[in-house]
Length: 79
Image (cartoon, rainbow, N blue to C red; front, side, top):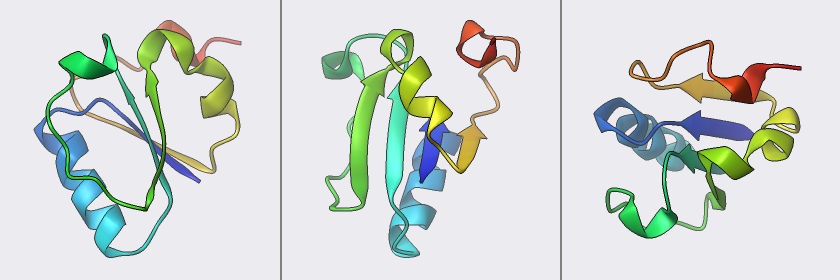
């Protein structure tokens, strides 16, 4: 299970690569899902969560890809 936190240019590029590689991907971004940048639908996208609701989901991930614009000190990773 791989999560991508942040769907700017880098996050969307990571999504394209992981989808190409056939990996299961979970997406986390700030704000309501309707306000997110458009992404191509894929059967590899297994979950989509607003940042404020994603803490429990992120605990289940094997790998978290943090986009460069996301601070490592955000409260998602505390505790």
